[in-house]
Structure formats: C-alpha cells, structure tokens
Image (cartoon, rainbow, N blue to C red; front, side, top):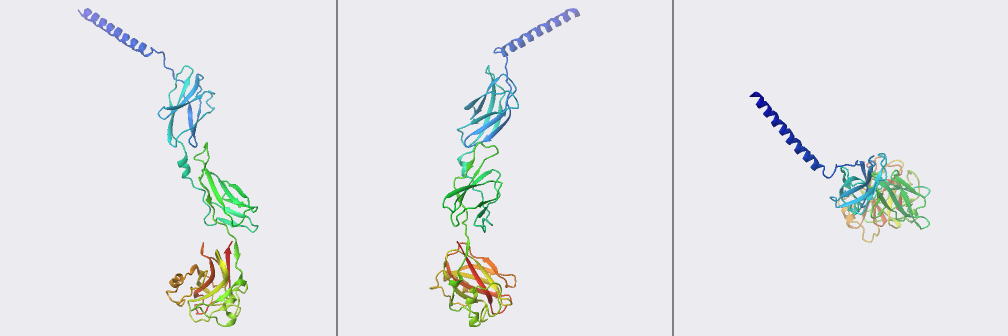
Length: 404
C-alpha cells in the first residue's frame, strides 16, 4: 500500500516539473523572439562649454569598436544632433557644438549607436545653462578706482586706475583721443589694475567697455552693451595772482594797518612770514570775514593753499565761500551772527570748503574745494577761530588752482 502512494507522488512531481519547464521555455523563447538585446558601450566624462545661444559638449568615447555614431537629444527628445564616432580611444575627446538654442537651462541625453542600430544606456548632461541677451544686459563695466581714478604724471602721461575685476573678466577696451587728435584704443587686461596713456590729450573724454566670459572654456566672449565714461581728467592750473584785487563788502573785517591789508595774501611770499609782511585783521571780533576778487571767473576752482603767520593768530577753523557776481551778494549780518551762513547762501554764495587745521596753522597746507563747483570769481574767507583764540587773524599767503 505504501509503495502505491510513493509511486503516485513521484508521478505527480514529474508532471509538475515537466509543466514548469514548458512554461519557462515558452517564455524565454518569446523574450528572445526578436533576438538578443545588445547595449553598445556608453560615453564617459561629459563636460559642457557655455556659449552665446549655443553650447558645446565634450566627452570621452567608449572603447567599444562597434560604435559608429552618437546622438545627442534635448527638448524631451524633440531635437537631436548626430555625431560620427571618429575614435574609440577612451583618452580621446569627442566634441560637438549645438547652435540655435534659447537662453535657457537644458538637459542633454547622449546615446551610443552601433552599426546595427543598437543603442547604449543613456547618459545625461543636466542643467546646462545657455547664455544670451539677458546675461549680456546684466553685465557692468569694470569699476575704476573711485579714490584715485587717475594720476597725471610729470611727463604728461596719464595713469588710469581700476579695481580688481571679476574672475570672468577677459579685457577692458579703453577708447581715448590722443595728442594727434586721433581716437585710439588700448586694452586693459584683468591681471592689471592700471594702464598708462602716454599720448592722451588732456581734457578729452575717455570711454571704456569690458568683456566677460560666463565660465571657463566659454565658446564666446560677451561685451557690455555700452561704453562708460571715465571720470574727467584735469590738470591744475594756478590762478594768476596778478589779477587778484581787494574788495570790501558791508561788515567785512578791517586790517590792522595799511601795510597789513588783504593784498599781502597774494604777494607771492613763500612760507610763514613775519609782521608786517602778512595780512593782519583789526581784532574787532571773531568770527569775521574778508572778501577779494580773483580777477576772472573760474569754471572749476578746485584747490587752495593757506599759509599762516610765523608766530601767532593763525586761523585753525575757517570757511571758504565763492560766487561769480557780487552785484547783490552783500550780506547785512556780521560774520559772528548765527544767521550769517543762511543769509550768505540766500545771497548766492556757495560754501567751497570748511577747513579745520589741527596744527599750529603756520605752514602751507592745501585743501581740495567743493567738487563740481559753480563758476567762481569772488572769494570770502570767514575766520571762525584762531590757534591763539584771539580776536585777530593773521595769514601770510593764499593760492588757488583751477582744473583745466
């Protein structure tokens, strides 16, 4: 009886094995009905090169000798380009440039194909940025050194100073007029922060425009859309002291005696002078004001130098005011009145400089005046305090320079 059950079990197991083998065999034949699937070797080490409405893709080819071409797809496989396989050395580089793109970020897919049409497993180059007009419109010209934009050298040449550029800057074109009245160009490289123009014609306009690349290995260089104007370059010309004249307005300070009048301030003396070769006020009060005529109008009065007396009463706090016409410029208030400044402004005077000296006031000291001043012919010096604290003020010399 046991032998019968044992034989029945073996028969059942054999039937099950036969049925199972038949199913697998049929499934395998169905899977291979179109032949075995072949995957050619795929590319390696894809890098991109940015460009202007285009990009380039570089990769190392697969060593698979059956590969005949590569196909690059983008825009969800709607667009493609075919690249012939010219090498199968993994150390070589296959290059393709893809033109006519939009300014956008793309994903590219690359397949390798063999001669039978089999294609590889895809490899992707993601987030590849393509640059264009929007990128270009955001570019700015390399900034100049705002503290010292230029230096005029003693030999007449001019040094232009710029700040350190961005790492993607490739050049800056400097356009200027030379001494022969010809427009010339020079190139400032990113490694340099200054450029010397040996033949620059003083007073003429200088323009500059920078160029950049969006990344290392860029296919294209992007120039800023427009030129910028470099700060105007001036030379300083000393005002002609032979034209200076004394002027007296109401409430101006008096001199101590006739030999110490205001005209002593432009007699050409050098260094601190002693009495009586100085301007010496009458000592009536502080603050006080004195006025004089430069002899002609200056469009860009830029700098002054003040020299004190050799001993005492030197101003350490004073104001420099200017105006081009004194027809209705007289102030009615004394200079020590708190309302004098407001009245002076109302009368058309411009405050050119507030000077505060921290020394003894003796030696010559230069001061830059108001940038971009109005035309000036007449000067008022309002003395607010002296080193000695007395009511007198003494000075040896005043010198002015105009920008040319």
